[in-house]
Image (cartoon, rainbow, N blue to C red; front, side):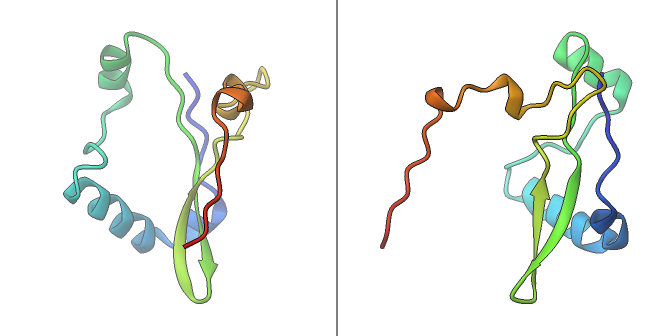
Length: 93
């Protein structure tokens, strides 16, 4: 199990993180969260989380999830994915 701490920007802006989480939960995009023990049961064993941070884009805070955060063995969520399987497409309006 890998539970890295959030980034300093998240620690400095807890109200922004809390509002984001509550908005996501209210929209049905995210669950309410689990204790570590309940998460082990839910996921059937070990799991990992991604640290969150806050960046300010033209004075509007945006939440980021660092999916490149590495565990002690050097694995990250991004390292498990092959970019060829998940191509990024850019469109203009």
